[in-house]
Length: 155
Image 1: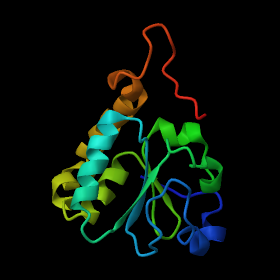
Image 2 (image 1 turned 135 degrees about the horizontal axis):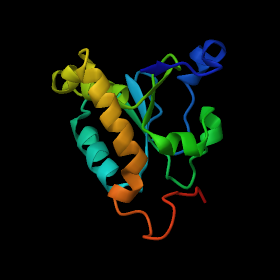
Image 3 (image 1 turned 90 degrees about the horizontal axis):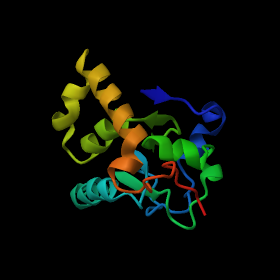
């Protein structure tokens, strides 16, 4: 699902050319920029696999848990970025959820692996399943105290 940024039309040309703190690439010829939680062990397994497979450097990786990451520079809040995976396309458009994974896997030549998640019926199930996972990600990865709310505060 693509969600345009409120200022996407005004910033489409410039948004693809700036480097967000926490990003590992200054390249402008990327296919997708992924905003990931570097403190999430499960997320890091996926990101590390994608880094290894990204031989053509088509993915820009941005760790939202990095000390120098500034969510305001993206036009998103830290809470929004933590709620579910976000990606940004070279033209500045935002994508979220399973669509980010489709773009990431496509960028490393594994688009066929996630292609079924775009088929009618399967798309809705995949999107629903991801939303449930995203809502429970902190609990599932052991980042909540038993009696505390599962919230990560950006320090």
